[in-house]
Length: 344
Image (cartoon, rainbow, N blue to C red; front, side, top):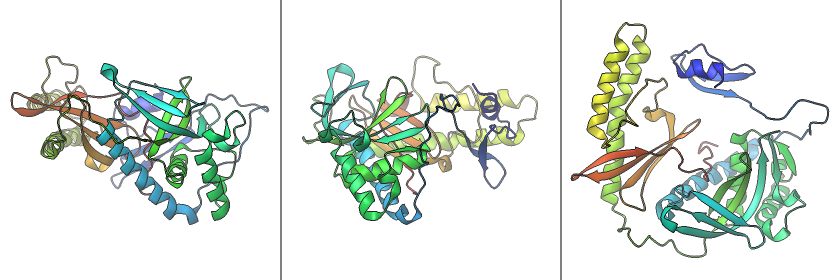
């Protein structure tokens, strides 16, 4: 782990990344830290691409596209269970994306390639500029280019660009929406390169045979359970942040966290028992950009919180002895989603 990041995670508010930057709240606490990482080596032969520069005149359109994609992500998670897939197959010749889930369940969609991101040099290549792709698989990207030419939006008509990922996501949302797609899927290739696909489902969402109709009351109760859990945990993290120099405080606070955990969780092991106190806290609602609750295909619910700056927290909630309890926290949920900022 990077040394500055290790210090930051341990609560050291003086930790700052070299050649990076931090944002602080009104109390001077670090709320966001950024550092550019690249596998590319500096050298004369390193390709240089124009930087993607946000266009203020396009901000309203991009904001609308971001809000649209967030809504589509939630709908696809709710109605089709996306986020829980274990693997995918994409056939470029047929344009068919197949998502594979546990217990042999699959979902298929028509897909087109919007573009690809290479983290080694932080470059994004639009599909319409990739000579290795058939034109039929790049039509949505081509529509985005046409819109860029019509609107004078340079980012949509520049073949390859050096990008900051946060600035790229609104463009992908815009391209998918302009093409009439149902959403965007991020496929990781060779462990690092991201290929972005626009999706179209030609069949209505079908529930798994064993799934009961969506119980809206259960979903509301599941979200209320997680909200109450966070509300009890947050003051403990805050107290540790404010009184961390006091002897014996850590043991006291961890005991209080464990007591709360035991009331909200139902497990036969100690895997998810609280073991740390952090600030900013994962339980702080102000650190969450998008929150929603969806049914789990095998019963119960998933309560999902997408962080404003990084990561997500995904709890599984199930009925246990007549009451809803948190039974798991999913670390591998939602790799195929992108979550552009709803604020543009």
